Length: 426
Ligand code: ATP
Ligand code: MG
Image (cartoon, rainbow, N blue to C red; front, side, top):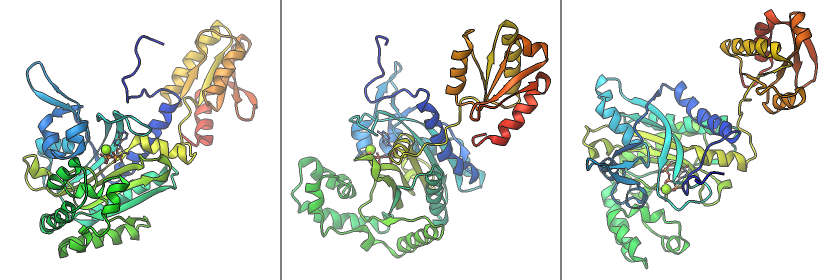
């Protein structure tokens, strides 16, 4: 214990849990790599205005959750609360959209910061994997992203992730709907903050979690009944495409999501094993965002999946994400000459792509074998003076307990072959 502990609402990732975290992050990103998304990384902070304009002045993220600071030079910055605005800013800045190859498909992974009330699954520092497809209006693209996210969850062995789907209309049909909804909401018995929300972002009221509010929403006008022909047609195509890919979904006419910039397709992945923090990921189409941050019209769609909550969902389902063993081979030297010989072997194994570790600290064989077992390695390589005199090492299969000598000169090749042959994790 030191004098310090991590700030409230944050966490350290430490072994062995960090291995599962990495495995989740990797699994969420893998389908994107296979689908032509290129990796993008943006700074941890941006100009405040990028988020206040890009995420929306009326959102909880901007009004309550943003960490802001003023630099010594007087610049107002914010720790990034989400990825989309930054990624679009980066793509515009690099003129990726001008290369003539639309959509620009990008993926990212990183930590995000929101000043929230910390609780299970809700942190002030958390991690997302995200994807954005910039510059194309095509239901196939919306479907592609939704399918990639669903495939990522199922590749992890998750069975309880449900997809909620809605359309928020576009600038053709949403204004009239918005006015109709405002008219309805103004007649309800609501607190002052919610009444203010009616004027700024009335759709968000539909998303209110309180029972007292939800009860009054019966009979509220729904976007679904106000979609223009183009939006209706677009949404129908998206629904067909994801259903055709075998991805189940539920139409959720009240799904609006927290950000101002969404148009048409919106979706959320939820898991019922997480208590009130049920959203494991979400996204949608944001056709107006580029213009909002000073760019050309670039209809786009994207999502962000929460790594932390995905890990919690796996725990809730008691699924172990295929966390790789920290070592495939563990070397246990008996004596000083063996330490030198086996350290050379471990280095050679690592260079040959085999995860290998070593019993450091000159401990006794018993404690060294304990470390070997704890490392998750499949093979221990044990050698003492007599083995070295004979030019061999003992290779022990830690699962079966079988042990046999292998010539030291063949050890790298032999172990590489055996690890590859029996490896579920590579
Ligand atoms: P919520 O409704 O739970 O606040 P959100 O709509 O604010 O979620 P998004 O901005 O869509 O979340 O972020 C995408 C995903 O990132 C969420 O589905 C969730 O898994 C994760 N996430 C968001 N905020 C947090 C947080 N404070 N701590 C941990 N994970 C988070
Ligand atoms: Mg939130």
